[in-house]
Image 1: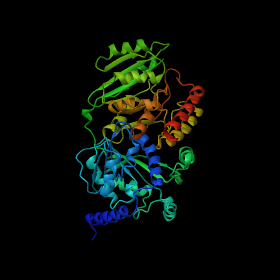
Image 2: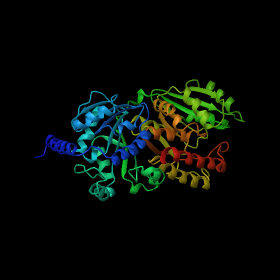
Image 3: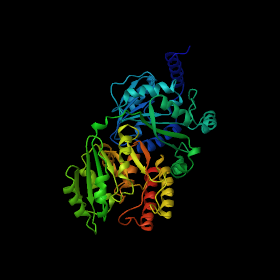
Length: 472
C-alpha cells in the first residue's frame, strides 16, 4: 500500500536525480517565469506577504518586488540557489504535503507546483496551516491542450526535461480545492507564447491571449478558505443613501429600511438637489429620533463623490448602498446582510435581471445595454457579474478601506462609484456574489442617468478597464 511518505520519498528521489543531472532552468524557463511574474504582480498587491510552495530556485519570486517573500521546496539544491538569488527572503527545504509553518501569509503561491505534486489534495489541505480567513491561494497549472506541445518541446531540447507530470483539468482542480476546504474566487487563462521572442511573444500574450483563453498554456486560479459564519449581533450596519431630487422618497426610505445586526446607521448624502430633498432629510431626522440617521451635503458632483463622503462617515462593520429612488426594495437588504454575515461572499452585488420587473421599471434600451455591459465586465473581471449598474452593493468597511488604499491602480476614473468598487474588489480577489432582487418602478422623481451620454462614458470606462485588467 502506498503511503504519503513513500510517495514523497519516491518523488524526492526523482527530483534530486533530475536536478543533479540537468541545469535547474533554461533560457526558456527564465523567460516563462518573467511572463508569469507579470501576471502575478497584478494578482498579488504590493505590500503583501507571499509564500511560494514549490519555489524552486526563486525564479518567480524575484519578479515580485515590494512584497515580503518566503518559499519552500523539496530539493535542497534549489533552496540554496533561491537563498543566493533572494537573500532578503526566507527559504526552507520541505515538501508542500508535510511542511510545518510557523506563520501565516496574505498569499500562498503554487506556480506549476501541482503539475508535479505527489498528492495535490494533501498540499492544498496542508496549506491551510499557513493561511488566515483573509489569505488567498493563487496558482497556475498547465492547460491539458498543451500536453503534446510541451512533450515535443522537451524532445527538441527547448524545454528542460521534467519528472512525469500531473495533468489536471479545470474541473479536477475545482473539485480538489473544494475537497481541501478552499472556495474558488476567480479563474483565468494566459500565455500563448512562453517566451518574449524579442517582443513578439509579449505582444501576442498581451493582446491575443485574452481573446483565446481555451488555447492558453497557463490556467490561473484564485481561491479563499471556506468561511465560517459570524454572529449576526456582532456586526453593525451602515446604509448609505445618496439622494438628489428625491424628496418624495426620503421618509419611505427610513420607514422601509430594516434594522439589521447589532445596530443600523442610516447616512443620507444629498447632492445639489433642485427640490426640497435636504429639508426633508432634516425633517425626518427630527421625526424619527429612534433611528440612527445622519445627513451630509456633498461638496462635489456625481454619485461617486457622494458615496465616498458616505464611506468616510460610516461607522458600521458592513456598508450597504441603497439608491434613494427605492427601485431596489429596502426590505431586501437583510438578504445582503446574511450573504456577508454567513461568509457566502465578501462583496454582494444586486442583480435586477433575474426576476420579472414592474412595468416601466427599466426601459428596453437600458435593459439591452445592461445585459451587454454585464457580459463585457464579466469577461474583463474573469468572474460572473450579471448586473454592474445595480446601485445596491454591500461589503465590509475593512474591505472598502483596502479598496481605497489600492485605488491608485485604477485612479479616480468612475463618476458613478459602482465600477470603482467592482474593479477594486476584483483586483483584491474578493469573493463577489450576485444577489437577485425584484426591481420596481419609481414612485417619485425622474431617472438621474442619461442613457446616451452615460452609455458612452461606460464604453470608455470598459476600454480603460481592459487595459488595466485584461491586456496587461
